[in-house]
Image (cartoon, rainbow, N blue to C red):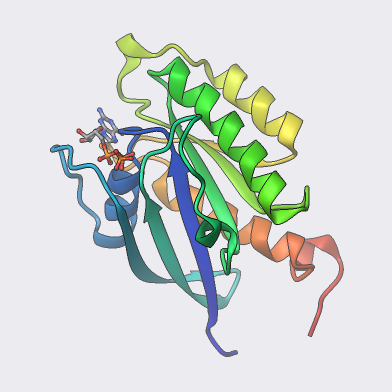
Length: 181
Ligand SMILES: Nc1nc2c(ncn2[C@@H]2O[C@H](COP(=O)(O)OP(=O)(O)OP(=O)(O)O)[C@@H](O)[C@H]2O)c(=O)[nH]1
């Protein structure tokens, strides 16, 4: 089977760990320092349900509710990882605003999306419970993963889930019972 190319963008408030998750996934290490991102693209080959994929991972600049939303973020992107930090209410509110902007710009409600709660290792600083994350994802009919880029927990799962969402929305998921050839 030929390799499938999929483009996945990480979006969210500043310093929630988008770059750290990307680097942990692509290069298998954790960066402790904080260097704000403008935009970076990485590639990684993965296998999912027997199919080889080349994932283009777009690590975007941190956003807040007032950020201008570049049109390029909705062009060619197959799926989105909306990342918040479980230690930041502001970052949780920001993913909601970003999703609204994504829906607005793409003109569809059926966007492959995974809600990602990062920094679960910071137990004492946690302000967003697992239930809050689960509920928001359920409202959106999106997938939900909690993770720690630092401890490399849940990171692979995020990318498996987004591939699953992309395949489902594109009608290619074997479990959806319908295949486009
Ligand atoms: N404890 C802990 N710290 C983390 C985790 N992920 C990221 N960090 C730290 O959080 C800070 C910000 O991480 P980045 O990955 O640069 O965040 P970002 O979302 O890419 O930031 P912007 O580029 O500004 O949008 C850094 O100091 C990271 O080391 C995590 O899972 N646990």
